[in-house]
Amino acid sequence: MRIAIGAYEFASKKKASEHVSNMLKKYSVGEVVDQADHDFLSALILRHPDYSNKVGCGISHFTRGEHPQYHTAGFILHRADGSATDFSTVTCINAKGPSIMAEFSEACRQAADPAVFARKSEMLDATEGIVACPETGDSLGREEYWLVQTAPSWGEIVDGFIETHAITPCKELLTESVDNQYAAEFVDPEMARAFAEYHAPLLNLVPKRIRRNQV
Image (cartoon, rainbow, N blue to C red):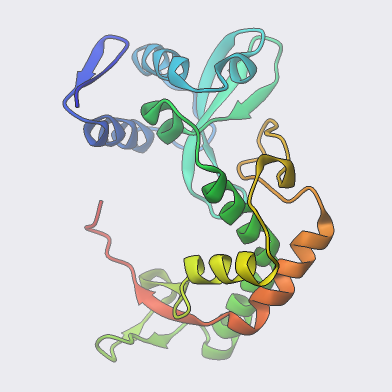
């Protein structure tokens, strides 16, 4: 399905995503985008389902940003009043926000992150950053692998938590979107604590080689 964004027309949403990815590669963190990319992003954010709140009093400029925990790249919208907010280019391209289940899963991830980061630090300290590739047995340096959850999968853990606690995922369980929040969180800290306790014995991290040639 073709998609038009400002002066650009793409053969598919995938092609539009590739264009955004190539744009990101042009800038370092904090760098202001050029006029052509500014115009594209200004048109792109028109597709965001929460456009009015994202833009607020008006767009001043865009910069490249970085997630404070995962260090993934994205664009930051700076408003005319000096405030700023993150926004999802994927949401803009799709012209719709994530599903309730996807947001619930992200809230679960936020609750589990402290334990996950602590376990990763322990594993890295114990191996001095050198691990054996589970596929080939080769030694991998710290820049050559991720530590990822294996069986049970993340989806299976979230589904199990929902079933065990008889939860119906809904908006009321999740925080409202605010500037630079990046991900939904649970309104009730007790639910976050319950997920952390459910998740802890299921945490099973293994090294996975980074395939740098993958898109």
